[in-house]
Amino acid sequence: MDQTAHARLRRAQREFSAHGTYLDTATHGLTPHPASQALQGHTHEVATGRFSPSAADPGIERTRATYARLTGVSPDRVAIGTHVAQFTGTVAASLPSGAEVLVAVNEFSSTVHPFSTRGDLRVREVPLERLPEEVAPATSLVAVSAVQSSNGALAPLDDLVTACADHGARLLVDTTQSAGWLPLDDDRFDYVVCGAYKWLLGTRGAALLSGTTEALARLRPLAANWYSGAEPWNSLYGAALEQGTQARRLDLPPVWPAWVALEHSLALIERVGVETIHEHDVALADRFRAEAGLEGQGSAIVSLPAVEGAAERLARAGVSAAVRDGRLRVSFHLYNTQADVDHLVKLLPTPR
Image (cartoon, rainbow, N blue to C red; front, side):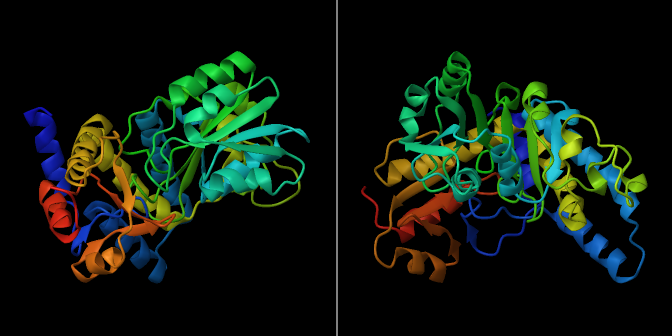
């Protein structure tokens, strides 16, 4: 990392105030000071009757545009919503009865359940690393997280793009555990869904869907509403609705506090740069892996056997981590430092 990038990272780290050692971004990211201040200002406006809903629209469009720049797509191909499962469900509803959906074993619920609960789709689970070779002519869609929630494993996305193209299948990628630290060109994927409250440092209540123009055209809005109209504030009443174009016809009404905060969180990530954040996060994670006797994985998430009492020991020492799938999970983001790794190593029994 060059000095300029390091300086940007150091400035950004001053925008956070973690209580203790926070190593749980894979559960929920920290809110940077500018986002927290904007959220407080919004709450005060609502409490005092000075909030104007229409005045929030420009900020939402700025947020949409920033997300588009960060992910390599155009803003008109980005829809806003509140939860990933809403958008995954929209994709699921577009599939014909009997279609095969290929997913990874132990994939995160919101990426899988909208397909499995339909009842008339064939959902086939295979090990993550075998997904590309399992794509077949009968496969309609592959749905996978770019980074697995349970253990931080990276999906073989390059091979999946090729396999799906070779067999005429679409590819849906969930970037909830990767957007903000893992550089990806989302323009390669048919659909991308993302929850913004983890590595994008937002709050609960903001999610995004993007896709290719062709793939988006196949989707029918499941919850058409005033905000998905071509002119939202002229679409409040009546049965007739002129829908927005491209992804905007899939917009869901915004949870305003979430988007007020997210604008500032994404601006901070863009200032630092995803490449810089990636280098920083992975270096910390791989340093801890080395201390724990594990091979480098190139992921910001580390999963290791949960030694009895380890999670409780960490909590007592002020370290925030998580237990997922019976294993201890720690995650490193731009606000973490080498000192956090040192502290963690001292608390856990690791090989030397």
